[in-house]
Length: 203
Image (cartoon, rainbow, N blue to C red; front, top):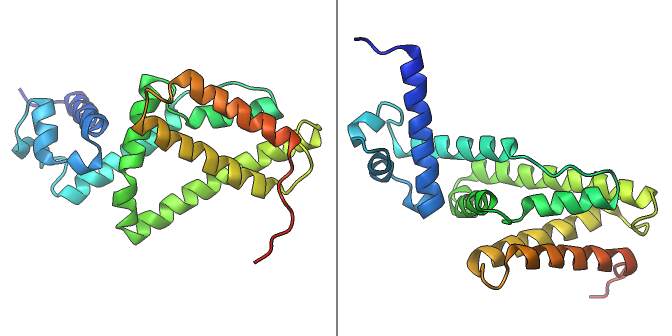
């Protein structure tokens, strides 16, 4: 009996799920056709129908990572400081799902740094994230919840803080459980409301 389009789409979903499980367990460095085939319980020959080369497999994995990241539920929050807090918490590995996503994302950095086009794309993604934070921070400033400062500068510092916290939590989850990550974000925001950064620098 010939396979239907539905069979083909179901198989593609199975393959994508196997790719995701390999990424979650081994990162991009462990992403090979053999590893995906083993996870899927199939032959590498079958997978070459979907991914003729390793580059095709990596491209699919990156697309899968982006789509899953975009589809992940986000915290609902009002405008102002609560929205800034929600945006920062949404980045952190606070659940099994977000821990897996962050592990995969961090493991993709080496791949991105080795590819100038991909590196530029990642740079744009981080810039877009900063822009969203900047807009949330500017709204909090207008409402009086944050002191008047350059919102782009505050956003850059907030992004750097939370990405550093991601890395620490991934490498030492016992020292940075979800409740401590949340507390550190709250501590950071509390300091932000009361301590303006230095405005002058000397060489």
